[in-house]
Length: 490
Image (cartoon, rainbow, N blue to C red; front, side, top):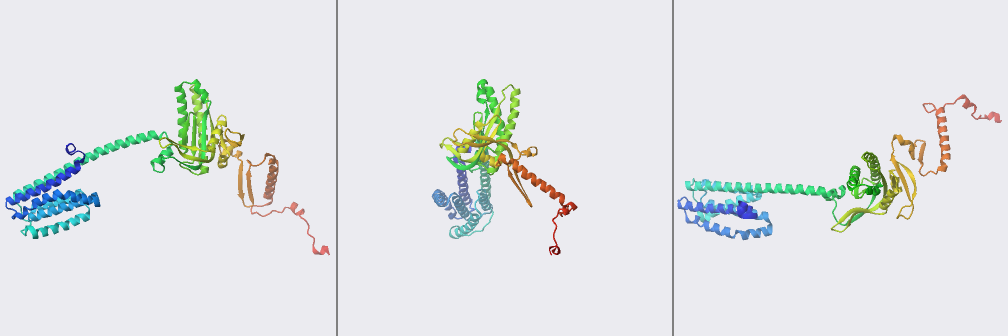
């Protein structure tokens, strides 16, 4: 009902009505007190036109206060003005007991309800006392204070207070209903926003939209130079298969493949750039990076896991009657430009650079279930992954030949014998061997040198006891060179 009467300004209009109602009741109490001769003197009646004139011109004063000091200053000024008028009223009725205490209690209630600052409340107390005594001296005179008022004034005062409190409670209930409806509306809007956000987030890398939601990135045309590890993959023979399958079967295979590969990429923290039919572009190093080496290792772990998952999918697809499909992968590491490209109305988060092209070409040159990596990537992962050097490749769009390695799997105990890097240091012993850089024609000489070293260590072990002292056998003493004494020389 309040909303229908006052519209959008209902809270402000209702508060204004409560103030005007309160001052109207004060004027009525003065008239009733004068008629019943409880209040003696015409000076008390002069307060009525003063209150009317003051209320008529108060808006101009409040507008200036709000203009210079703000909204909260206007609220404090309104409260001080009301305290001033109520003090005049109490002085006019010579502080009759029940009406005065009801009015004081009403002003305290207003101060608590409207959250008037404490220093304003303290200032209002000083203002009220000063106004009461000055007005008594100048206008209303000194009579007996705190006398019991007549029945009429007491009933009207209590009735006014009950109406005033009831309207405040009604107003509070009204505000509560408005806030509750707004809260429900905001919750619905937030739920709708989250659903739309989750749907739109599926069209962008998860790391990207999370950074945007946290305020770390902005959706604007910009890019930066970062060292990335780039991954390309596709399904060999998928194009030919698409011509022999109906669209529903083709969509099933593609979605099944991309679903599993995407989950693996998310597990290892890869940024999924885009899907290109059956192809995938994933990179590591932006917007979050764990370091060049760790990014490269995570990329290779992802690739090996994808290859293993593809074997499981292939077996399942064959049992379902589909052709055997295989995956090809290419990985390269290097500096690229990564960021938002396009226009302010339509942009894409992607990478541009030579090493991205190398990764794409390596994927094209890979054979069935092969993972080819560039030399830069190999240097980062060679201590953790078993790799076989591939013949230099002449890739399309790349002027010079590209060195590549084929990834077998991560090192573990069963493939320790395939290590190509040995680095061991102890007191009196230092071994540094890199078979990747050792020419094959040097192998016989290396074997001979290392065998001689092993034989010498074994001989030294036989001649030394547990305490490290050398054991001198008779055979060894016989072969010692003889020393000539000085007498024999003479």
